[in-house]
Every structure is written in C-alpha cells, then in structure tokens.
Amino acid sequence: MNVLLAGDVGGTKTNLALYSPEKGPREPLVRVTFPSSAYGSFEDMAAEFLRQSGAVLSCAVFGVAGPVEGSRAQITNLQWVIDADRLAPVLGSGHINLLNDLEATALGIPFLNQADLHVLNEGEPEPGGPIGVIAPGTGLGEAYLTWDGSCYLAHASEGGHTDFAPRTPREVKLLEYLMERYGHVSYERICSGSGIPNIYAFLRDKGYYREPAWLAEELEKATDRTVVIRETAQNSTRACELCTETLKMFVSILGAETGNLALNILPTGGIYLAGGLPPRILGMLESDVFLDAYVAKGRLSRILKRIPIHIILNTDLCLIGAASFGMDIMKTWDERR
Image (cartoon, rainbow, N blue to C red; front, top):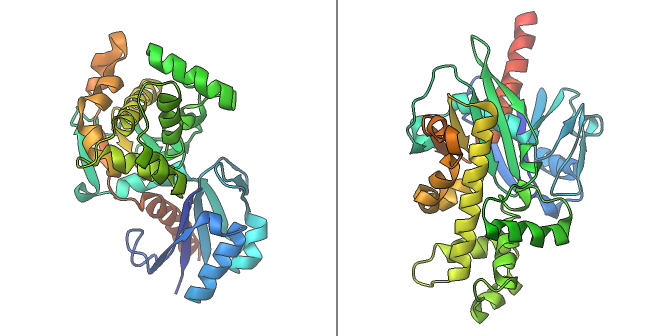
C-alpha cells in the first residue's frame, strides 16, 4: 500500500500522521502529537514515529513553522533545522517535500466543511476570489490563495514578521516597551501565543493594571504562561482585569493586522483565521473588539465589511493540506506509470 507521511511541525508541538490516498487527506491511518522541545532534532522525532508505526513510506510532506529555502527550513521558534537530504535515510524515502506551515494550511482550506468553520462576518463572498489566511499560534503565520481557473493555488508569506504599527497612544508605548527588549518589533511579537505574555508584561510593568499575588505565583510555576493568562482572562469565577485587558489588546491588534492583510490582497473569497488560538478565544473574537479594529481603515472600511471572515475550528488543517499536497504527487506518479 502507498503510505504518505504528513507533518505539521511547530515550535510547541508537532503532529505526524500516516495517510493512504484511498482514504483521502481528512482520514489519517495513524496520528500522533509530539512535544517539539522534547527532541534534539526533527530526525530523532521522525525516527521514533516510524519505529512506533512500522510504516514503509512512499513519500513525506511537512508543513514547517518557518521559512523554507529549497530543501531546508529553520523552525522560527525552535532550534531545529530540517534538511530533506538528512531526513531521507531516516525516513527511507528520498521523496520529501517541505512547505511553509501556512502554505500547507492554505492548501487544506478547500477540504473544509461547514462543521469546521465558525462565521465571524458573513460578508459578500466572490466565487474564485483571493483568500487570505492568518494564523496566530505559537507564532503568527500568514498566507493567501489565488484561483487559476480550475483550482486554488496556495502562496506562503512571512507577513507575521512585518513591522508592528501602533494605532493608539497605548500601543505606541507598547512598541517602545518591546523595542527595548527586541529591537525590531513584528506583529508576531504581539499577535501570537508567544506575544500574549509580552502584552501582559507591558500592562503590568507600566502600571496600567495590578498583578494579583495568586496569579504571580501561578505564572512563576507555569510551563506555558500564555495558557494561564488566556484561561484566567476567560474565567468568569476568578476575575483578573490585567488578564482580561491583555486578551482584549491582543484581539484588537489581531483585528487590525487581519484588516492589513485584507487591504494587501483584497481577499474577496474570504479570510480564514487558523492556528491554535482562535478556537480557544471564540467569545472574545465575537465581541466588537476584533471587528471594530478590523474595519477601522478609514475610507476603505466599506470594502473590508464585504469580506467574509471565518474561524477554522479544525486544528489539523496543516496536516490536511500537507497530505493533499503529497497525494497530488502520488497521483502524478500513478498517471505516469
């Protein structure tokens, strides 16, 4: 049986799955999630997965959280370099493709169904119109799709690393605060899982809101400060103004950057919010905070209001896209035989 290995390789976790072309990209034969930082290299992780599964591969496709240059990729938020030539003997296959994770995510969008989506803005979708994808997870990914007359083509970008543009006096102070820490301040430094603690620290250190002692203790012990801040902000039984305002600021800036993406590519086919964070903060995204920031583009606000916005609830979209890419390759092989 032809077996495809697909992967969603991220700074926090990595999903690996085996697929058969007969079952399609939505039905993995085996799927395993690994903590990325627990492995010294991707080769070590892949070798363990293959030992567990006993699979013999026809080819492999990996969506990786970082820029892809030829057959190599550096994971942005992890000290891994993935090299297809080094991977080949580990996987037992020389047919290895590396995609930017947002390109793989974008490739998965045509395979979504209604149950995979939550509508934020109905808009007025244009058939065959460009589609934008923005994905706050550990980092911030952006991509887009264009229609070639018969299907959508996915295009990677590193838009999450563009310069953060403050819109309010408080955001100006946030920029100044983060410039002292990082020098260059991109949207990813703010609009991502790794960025939420940056907003929190700014609001605390500049005296906007007080940090409760019990929360300081929890954050000191936490392995992931973002989870503590996010869950506390949405916990109605244990209020914390600092966490609530942190999440509001995050959502507002995410809305503004989503609007920037919309102006850059005019995605009349819609915008899709992917990544691990949006499904976990649905209530906040449904508030006026996100959409008010999204449409606040002066004379062009009317255009943005017409663009549909969806939250992707299916967290395996990168895997689905990587698998579909691999299946297209395998189909081409079959046609040439």
